[in-house]
Every structure is written in C-alpha cells, then in structure tokens.
Amino acid sequence: MKRHELHELHYITPICNVPSILQHGLLSNVRAAKLKPASVAMQAIQDRRAQVVVPGGRKLHEYVNLYICARNPMLYKRLDQRDQLCILSVSPNVLALAGVVVTDGNASGDYIRFAAAPAGLQIVNQELTFAEYWTDADTIQYYRKKSAKCAEVLVPNRVEPRHLLGAYVWSEEVCQRLLADMGPLRVEVNSHLFFA
Image 1 (spheres, rainbow, N blue to C red):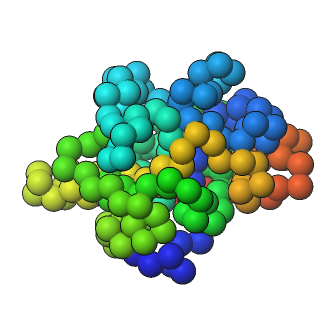
Image 2: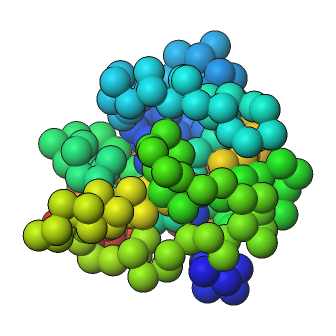
C-alpha cells in the first residue's frame, strides 16, 4: 500500500469515551488505564496483546492502535454493541510522527510483520485489508485474510485531538446522540462499516 492511497485511519471506541478523547486524545492502553475508559476489547485478546513487544523494545500496550480498516473481525464481534460504538476517523498524517509502526495484520497475531512508518505501509496488502469479507474455504487463506483485515498503525503513547477528523456511526439515531459531543468534527452514518 502507498501513502497517497490511505485517506484515514480508524479507532473503534464506545461513544461514552468521546468527550475524554476530545480532551486528552487517543491514549495507549497503559496511559488510558488511569482514566478508566469503557472498552470494546475482549479480555483474552488484551491479555495476549499485553505480552507482545514491538520490534524496537516497547510493549504493544504502550501504543495507540489504529486500524487501517475498521470493517474487520474485531468490530464484527461487537456488532451487538453498535448502538454504543463509533469509529473515529484519524488523519493518516500520524504516520509521520516519531516511532510510528505499521503491521500487516493484527499486531498480536502470529507471523506478523512490523515496519517503521511511513514507508512501512508497503507491507500492508491493500486488497486483503480492504476486502469486503475475510471468509475462505481454505483454512490457511481464511486466517491470512482475517489477520490482514486487522492491519494496524501503532502510535507511541498518544494521538493528539488535532489528528481527529470525525466519526462514523451505524444509524441516524446514534448520529444524533454523538453530534452534541463532537463539536466541530463531522459525524457520518456509514452503516456499511458496521456490516449493516
């Protein structure tokens, strides 16, 4: 994937976290713990991520994890919560920040490649990451596609609020609830992102 082909990054979060995010920015798991935000994460996955050390020596939980495409297996697992969720749109300019790392799949998965941004985008398989679905009759291909859908951009410590572009929600009702919290940032209904 090339930098000019990436128009935004995504961060999946409960809507109740938005006011804090607009004030403090997106925080790594380690930094956010002090604020006790609501979480969409599955504990088993977080336990696994807690053990991962990104090449260069920092723990995965010291990074803000942004998805290259939020229409992925993680969001699919949380569809029953979509009335409480939004996908924040983040400027891809964060790729130019110091220490940013790109992965070609879920950062806690097996056989995942890590590369320094922004050139690291070249390891991302754009076709698989933005594919409509990750299903496949071949088991190996299924896991390969599923992992690629969760390709990440890892930003050390914090993404400042100035990098936020807006938010996506799955319905007009949710949009109306979120509008009051978003200030000048746009809120769009994009039911496709939420598999609707």
